[in-house]
Image (cartoon, rainbow, N blue to C red; front, side, top):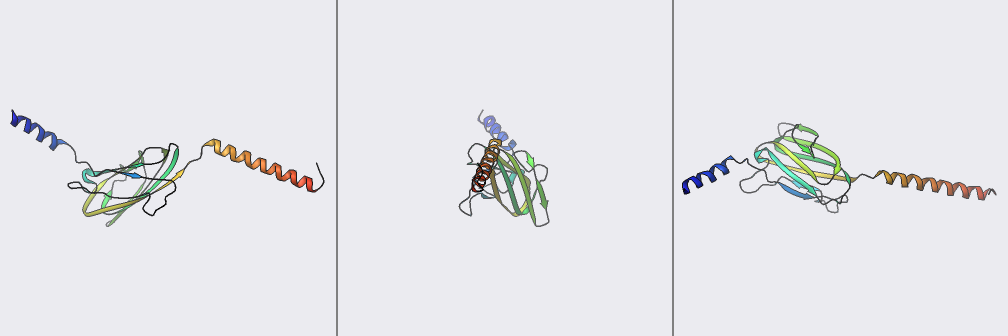
Length: 167
């Protein structure tokens, strides 16, 4: 009985896919430090860069709303998959050379943002990335801006009319 249980546990562990060293990165629209909105490939014992072919990076920390998120990633001794690497399901531009790989991925949407980096590596693989976040104004913001500019124009016109003696 113990042998069967042990064999079942061994088979279950052997059949599971290798998972990457996933990470969570806190991002902000106004980075203060140079290290803000920056990430690097993370390794853990027995789990390297793009192990299992995938690293998942959750981008958290933004308040509710719509954001334009742009990510640039560069790495050495690895190849990013241009079809599968994505930000919230949106693929970007991937350039792979013999020594380095670069990816530029952007998406407009709401929290949470999830970056999936697919690819393969050789010895000494590493990557790092930079995240740029911009809040996308809601349509009402543009309406208030237009109304404010119209009011300023009316006040300037009225003041100019008074200086010429008009009422």
